[in-house]
Image 1 (cartoon, rainbow, N blue to C red):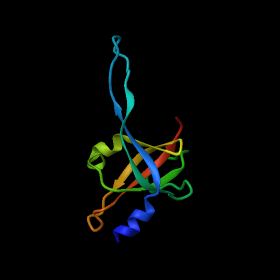
Image 2: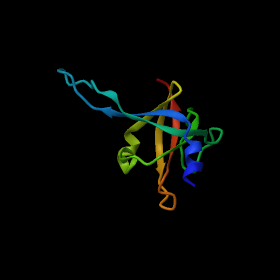
Image 3: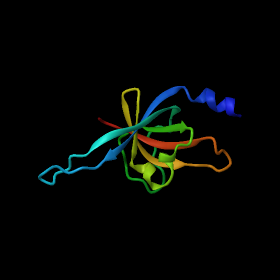
Image 4: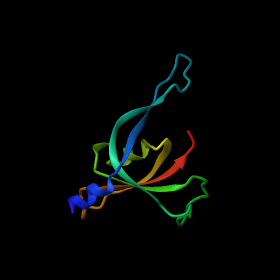
Length: 113
């Protein structure tokens, strides 16, 4: 089963998080900082369809398969974005299935840089 997972993780993905900061005038001077990189699998997640209760969005949806990382646990995972092939993917949700502890699935939406 581990071999099956390894074959799916063929794309280089960079994980970034927002580092808040203020300048001398109190304005937002934060920046995205790199947490690290990982290999993952990136697949389209539907054709831009909405799930129940969601507002319309214009970004394309993606399903990203990764090995578990500490940064992807809990609500802090929603403060992370991914860079993949020159695109930015905003994390919308994390699926962590205890039956398959060697992987985590991120539901993401493409956004402009």
